[in-house]
Structure formats: structure tokens, C-alpha cells
Image 1: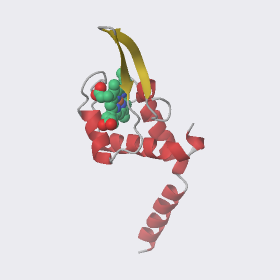
Image 2 (image 1 turned 30 degrees about the vertical axis):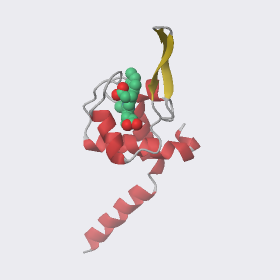
Image 3 (image 1 turned 120 degrees about the vertical axis):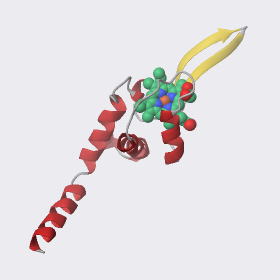
Length: 114
Ligand code: HEC
């Protein structure tokens, strides 16, 4: 009984004090996810960016890495696991995808994540 209380307390303390640690891990993964970093295409905060502009048959065209803000978790995961064109295919675990999602949903309001 006493042991489980001690265990419970240390676990809750670990989570309470760990906001930056979780964010730092998530940021690290975003920048270096065993493959080319998301940061290069989707920008440092997942805000998205234009990767290339070119002309095709006289028309201006763009290749855009979309913003990752405001996506549902399902859409986010699907986007990573089933990339359609320019984006590379990643082999990430569910936990890693959770962390990346954590990063893009928290970075917007948290300047410490810079
Ligand atoms: C080489 C550039 C590039 C890199 C690196 C990249 N992406 Fe993408 N991403 C794109 C482009 C371009 C699209 C648009 C659709 C497509 O090409 O698949 C996209 C689409 C997405 C989508 C779908 C968005 C939607 O609106 O449905 C998600 C989610 C996503 N990327 C997340 C990530 C994450 C997380 C990483 C890092 C693990 C990453 N991307 C790395 C270029 C990139």
C-alpha cells in the first residue's frame, strides 16, 4: 500500500514537472524523425511553406507543404503514413506520431518550444 502510494506520487510528479521535457522530445522528433526532418518542409512551427515555384506550360505552379495546424489526429496520422507526392514515407510508431501531433498542436501557443 505504502509502496504503491510512493510510486503513484513519483509518477504524477514526473508528469507534472515534465511539460518542457515532453515538448523537447516532440520537437527533437519533429526536427529529426529518422528521415528528413518535418521542419525542412513544414517549417519550424508546422506552419507550412512553399517548397518550389515553377512554370509549366506558361502557368505559375507551386509545390506546397501544407500547414499542420488544426488537423484532427486521424488526418495527421494519415498524412504521415500515406504521403501522396513530394513528402517522403516515414516508418514511425504510434507513440512517435502522438509526439509529433503534440508538437504541432502545442507549438503555436508556446514560444518556449522555439
Ligand atoms: C520533402 C518535404 C516534406 C517533408 C520532409 C515532410 N513533409 Fe509532410 N507534406 C509535404 C507535402 C508536399 C505534403 C502535401 C501532400 C503530399 O505531398 O503528400 C505533406 C503533407 C503532410 C500531411 C497531410 C496534411 C493534410 O492536410 O492532410 C501531414 C500530416 C504531414 N505532411 C506531416 C509531416 C510530418 C509529421 C513530417 C515529418 C515526420 C513531414 N510531414 C515531413 C512535404 C513534406
